[in-house]
Figure 1 (tube, rainbow, N blue to C red):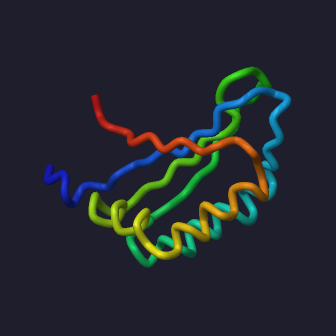
Figure 2: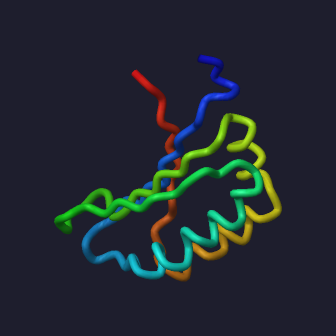
Figure 3: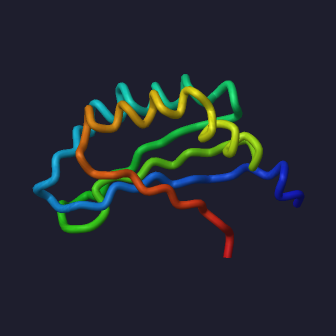
Length: 105
């Protein structure tokens, strides 16, 4: 498979404690649609949110972002709209997002 045209998955994770604020409703209803609207034009195919079933120190939330290919990923994160997506983060949490690229083992 050509890695230049293969879908690319990026996980945006939020690591914290049960005491950290994370507004799940805002994240799902406002932030993810904002990211989709901003980056679909560059090749973002889908976004999905996952939350742990129990509260404990560690992962508070995960977003799976699927991009059309490597070029789409690079263009989206370098786009003018990327600053709008990042500026929205403080509206639902003070936890800094971390981007992790999924690579098949």
